[in-house]
Length: 112
Ligand code: HEC
Image 1 (cartoon, rainbow, N blue to C red):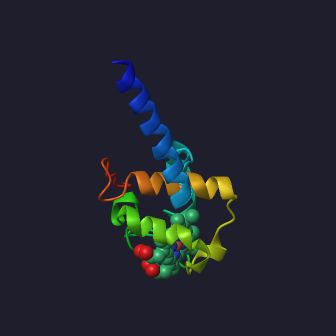
Image 2 (cartoon, protein in one colour):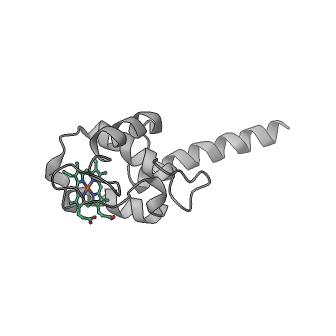
């Protein structure tokens, strides 16, 4: 039993370190959800009316985890990057929310 606990702890530590190594995605997904709805959704839904809107649904389940990693690995390349004014922490929250709810994640989430 003791061995199992130690193994589980080692696994958890390893998992967090791999997570940090990949990208950020160590933020608060609940805060990310709030920020995404406030900052991104007005342009990223089917019936978006905001000026310059993409007009297509975008939410956690719109991409796979690897795709979110790609997007956030080069976030400044997004055509809308200049439209927002978010701190690194806030972006990390949003990225964490999107990554955790990705289509191929254990908990896919639709932003609706
Ligand atoms: C002022 C409107 C606007 C806002 C606000 C906005 N976007 Fe965009 N975004 C666009 C447009 C226009 C495109 C280019 C059209 C497209 O690719 O769908 C785009 C493209 C993207 C893409 C690439 C398209 C894709 O499906 O892969 C991603 C990812 C993205 N935005 C994420 C975000 C995130 C995250 C936020 C919030 C932090 C955000 N956007 C806020 C207008 C906006």
